[in-house]
Image 1 (spheres, helix red, strand yellow):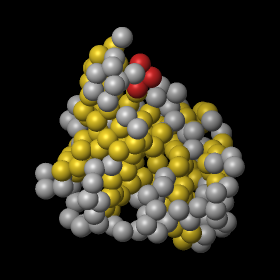
Image 2: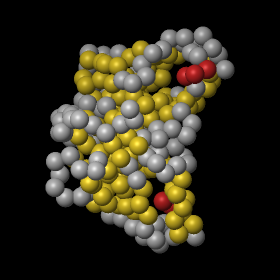
Image 3: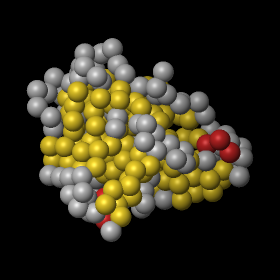
Image 4: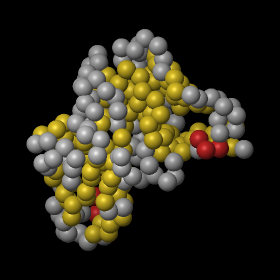
Length: 116
Length: 113
């Protein structure tokens, strides 16, 4: 079964507007972490934001916030005030267990295009 | 700090050839991982290591070998290249324990003809 599901292959947003990228996950481990990465056309993987399963508050990093709904097993990324430079592929990923061992499972990504 | 470095950046192999993709990190990170990214898809874990002398298989290990003799280096060996191994390969590293860090290298684009 797919552990990370990103149902939006492509999304468009107008510059300066907010956009939500969807991510649902599946795990039976009570301890896990959720990540979002950005991959621009140049190909590098850029870490954006992290949410731990026991974190009480939704994670925020500048214009990025993670809408964590544990009961629904969703971890949507919200980008506020979109910029042209936000056009990229976005990946949701999950780490299961308490220990960070470099074993992440990735979704297939969402391509975001920001229109001027 | 150079971070996570990968060599080569690009490589073309013929079917049946072998080669080693190099990965090094200078941050004294405990864990290192290898992922592959096929076109239009997310990253899939090939092998990972939680410390020198310790390695384990990920989701797609067949056709690849790894070893970790030092903390800094984690080479990925393709034993007999196949066209199905055409992909972009990313190495990652991070601190273990409760940390959530994961730093990626720039990737190696491999084509097998």
